[in-house]
Image (cartoon, rainbow, N blue to C red):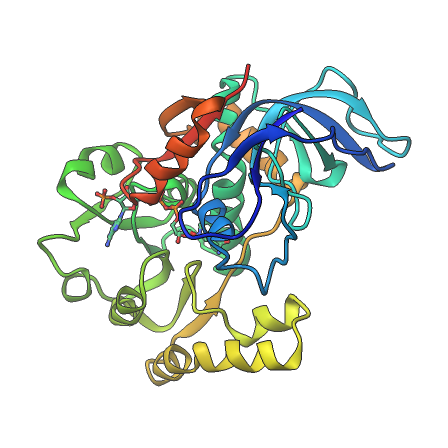
Length: 333
Ligand SMILES: NC(=O)c1ccc[n+]([C@@H]2O[C@H](COP(=O)([O-])OP(=O)(O)OC[C@H]3O[C@@H](n4cnc5c(N)ncnc54)[C@H](OP(=O)(O)O)[C@@H]3O)[C@@H](O)[C@H]2O)c1
């Protein structure tokens, strides 16, 4: 089958478009014929070798974390899915590879694709949708009447998180450039702060939750927007000791991660704020709940650009600019 392959870790290195064997199907896997694959900055970071220690993929391997497609075969222990089902998924770590014509995915990571959206739109959802869900619902326990600041509202995570937070009944502030203000307002943001001309940390205070996906400076400034007892949840680092433990990392790596987050944990403690890092995980059951929110019109996908499969390297270069408005996908069928 045709696939985009990482032959060796290299910063901004082009993926090789080549032939790979069709994936072997395990008993609890479904084989998905890929119609569209979503791109994420995680793909760029894995390609660049930034995740080598935490996610040790051995080249050559197929990249890609988001898929929408049709089930063509199922393993002997599969109970929920059947051939012909239209599904989408963020395959679990260790089993990625959606930039290909086929991928075998554990049934537990798969959900039925929302009926009211296209394959391209569906492929844009799983990783960012699950991230927003795990930050806002699981980790923050965001409730009606609370206030949340979502950084980079015009990005992949931001466009989904704004809609989910509004659905949960929160007041939503977001940082975005002036050019994207109308888009994030339309998604439901109540307060939009142009990060190029204004200082969010001087305008916002008493917030219950901040979702940070930006740099260390923004992370630290976000403490000022939070009330004592508020939650600062970062998806762009630095990883905290709980994450290191959960990943089962060795003692040395655990110490390194502990040191990396020591500064922000100390400052958060001083402000009475709870700091945590979150690395999203595959979860077909949660994705099924997201399917319902999309089908009832609560959440809609925001796809910036769809590239033909053959132009995957160009699509990756586009997300690497950091200027995407919503999501970028490649189309196979
Ligand atoms: N830990 C996890 O599980 C997890 C999961 C998903 C993502 N992430 C990480 O989260 C980060 C964001 O991911 P993403 O996919 O949402 O990114 P993205 O879609 O590439 O974000 C691009 C958007 O960010 C906006 N932006 C850039 N700088 C900004 C700033 N200083 N303030 C406000 N907005 C800004 C850009 O708007 P302008 O063009 O107007 O600047 C653009 O619309 C990445 O580092 C990614 O790796 C982590």
